[in-house]
Length: 113
Length: 113
Image (cartoon, rainbow over the protein chains, first blue to last red):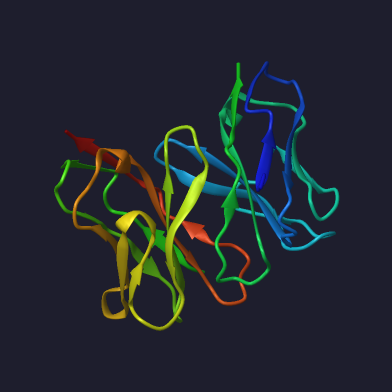
């Protein structure tokens, strides 16, 4: 059982570079999420996809774009990375029902210099 | 909109001592409530959840939590802490019809031998 798989695990970028964080789940979940985690800030939602074909902004969407490529995959793109985007990024998924738990990936640690 | 407050940023306990982590929520109706644990370098894992029924909920690893509507609280407890319980703990609240659970800022648990 792979669950939620995120790649890469670590990444260092220079300011202005672009990159895409990949996320895939094998649990046939409808909803997928991207969070960032910063010290003292907890988890903040960047974007989410309630179902295949839909995406919506979360609390901190500026500087990011997402693509729900299919039911399994939900990618997060940084078009022009900034030092403020240095963070740990988590992808999560769950079934559509709102009382179900989230399944999290192991995270991507991103540093922007 | 719902919100979650975890008043304690850090909690330090001795191994074998009891533990209570506080969580207060704000939501107009009956919420869905969750506690997640994050071990160092890992994603979040569900400890327990409440969405209806018995207000005392049992979870994994010997944890329990009690939903108190009158106090808008969902505190996490464990009678005897083990060194392996050292981690970050997150309370989260969900609402009926919403795809977006809201996370607290987390409480870091430090366990002294």
